[in-house]
Length: 245
Image (cartoon, rainbow, N blue to C red; front, side, top):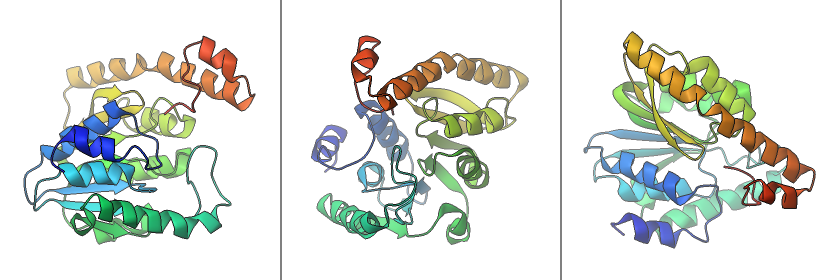
């Protein structure tokens, strides 16, 4: 499969949280990299985003997928207690890679992201973070793995301006950063380019991210209404009725 529309259509039955716009952003960034580049994905679940990244990547690009498939931080409101599903998630992940014809293109590290830092040598050209959404692990992924991204490389963060923990991590690390330049978002997937930055770039980056905070507040409202089983009210306010991602 060599075009985005075909690949994305083939993933419609694969569990995961990714809109077409977000998948297109992953595809665009992955396909732009030359042979010899390295892509790192943190948080693969059942392989929806992994298949997009690997299908778009040029031959000779190293695609590294990091996910312990340990039954924790599995999805929205699924922080722990899913050990029985963990091995199933892992087997489904491998089967999806096989079905899309990219299993031999992906190096899967079944580890927690902080334990896998030493398994990726050299610079990272594209880092996609969709791991644990609590503040501490999210900030650790963005900070520690972000340090491995080369100057000019890109960082994509899922559930930015949607998850409280992820958004607070971005506030702490990227809002007024000497090295991360905000380049926009597809719904809750934010894109950054690694600097260094000028003062003007930092100011524009900061302002652009601040302007996304009303979207963040609306997502929090949707989550509160859905948690209270007031989905009909959320839909009246513009929600799709699904957990915002």
